[in-house]
Image 1 (cartoon, helix red, strand yellow):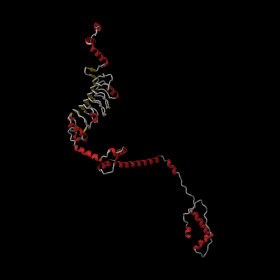
Image 2: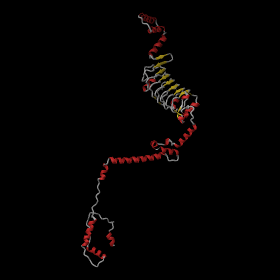
Image 3: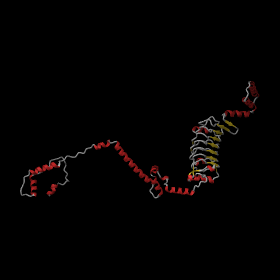
Image 4: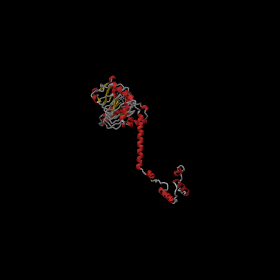
Length: 411
């Protein structure tokens, strides 16, 4: 610093003292006078390039921002981008898309505390840019869904706290990607089964409704064969079945032989899903709800016919009944189509009444003169010679294939 600049600063201080301006400002100027030029330049550059908020504490190794209990609905964008430890607990943050974008800016973040917020879902790639993060606390939220790639990029994460949420299912691959994870906390969730393929030093599982059946056998085996320490082991109890509700999930008497035999029976009686078309799957689903007894009989008798054909036949019967009912309904509700059919009146062709024909024939016989001493045959011949009966045209066509009884007798 030049002599002229030093003199100017001393004059400024004397002026302030003469005007009774005392306090932090005079103390600051005093420190500036005693600083060397390189350190002064570094301090000025850091001051203007990274303005620190009032709630961030900056040291030579870390930048800690305390933003808890401020009723934030989203992560504030005015935070120091060089923050290494960020505490945002007891707010209303949901980790939506805008929050994800803000988190990508904190590339130096090593500890993130989001406990006691309003998070319900952990979406894919939420923390993908936080490559230095080692501690992630998202406990005491409302998380029910964790997508498979939610923790992608957290290669340095060693502590994951998911206590006091509503997680009912957690894919093992989601945790397996965290290669450096040593502590996993899953206390007070809704987990019944959990298949673990990674190795931890400490795990917390108490407060979940564990179902100590065949589905929990892999977790039990992992707890007993790995070097993991289960915290609160005596409080991590089975919720189902009732006879084991006081047994630890680590020591519950789950019989591996029973599980193997059950899997074998299922493999024999259950048809391959790859051989069932989507249409048959829909038919099976519909029929399973209405015909449980038939399903049990098919499952217990491997020689019975395939389920798909049986339900296809039932579906055909159902379609027939529905179509018939539809036609009957249309006939009742819309009767106009058959009124024309009913209005048709059948009219018979005109023909001579039998009574009139008999009367005319009787009258003609009465006019025939009587002949004595003749037999019946002679009378018939005489009648044919003297009286010829000719039918009038009546408009009908005579059928040549109908035999005349009179001609038959004559012959």
